[in-house]
Length: 422
Image (spheres, rainbow, N blue to C red):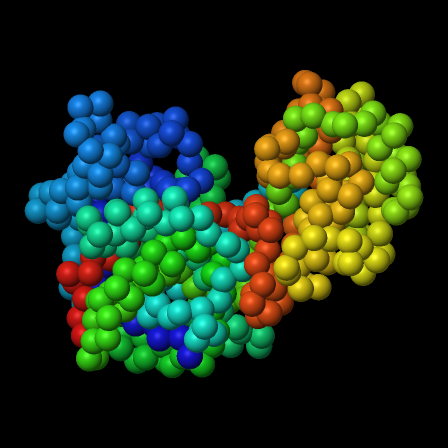
């Protein structure tokens, strides 16, 4: 079902400096201040391509995309980016400590080009909705550079872990092994033996793929291809770059995304009274809230003063009929749906997305309630199987539901459409 192919990638020459200085997280998870800090690390940092700067005297907001394209070509000409001699897959392994614990895990991905398919073909499936503004930005940069500057992140069916083992055991040449400032170790290997590449491609060919991160870029690549209309044979625009991970990889980690309220319509006593009508409510110190909900269906509330509450429920079934939206039961059973559709809307009368901020760091949520926030709602993350069920049903998870950790580094390899080999 999924068509993957090795490709001739562009990689940084050793002369530009350490990879830790020219790589960066994906464009959509770094702030403008972080972007500038990465750009100052090295004159060839990948953010200068993925997030080109807008100059004060630019006559158009689109000039920055041309600036990215010109810079990419300049780096090729000067030898800062070098084209691989032959097509290859890349094995990308990240070893990391799970935030909030001392557990160390490794996650292995196959960096490949994959044929983009409409969602209706049920080959590549989404789990989140996208926003036109973000897609326009990525389309402009794809049009200008005619390159996929970053990988998106996908998961493939692999219940028996056989494909994971095949990728992990493939003969390869190590290209990079370094750690970034966040303590994550990145190992990047090239797999270019034709037999190994063929075995991996064949093993993935009958698999479905779920988009974990990168829905906007996937839909951008799909629109980029579809506007060309029917063509004979395969063309460069049929493909994009993706890092594929087995859905059974033991290092696949999702982090929770907590909500910090900006205002609260009731005091703590009234909140407890209202929650008690629908949940089993218990008092727990703020610092113990995540531990208290870790093995149960529950949502926690951190409150000023150091003591919070846990609202426990055995199953979301009792709330399904009262949770608004068009999604099916798999969506409405999610903790985030219970929080937004039931607790926020039904219990507290709060609607929209502007009455809270997001954080994925428990301590940030706890600190917030001690520095002015009236409450922070803490949740367990959804599981990979939750995402899989929602996507397979054709539904979409609520915004900011999933956060796969760690994020892929951008800059380890770039793929230009002009280097496509039919």
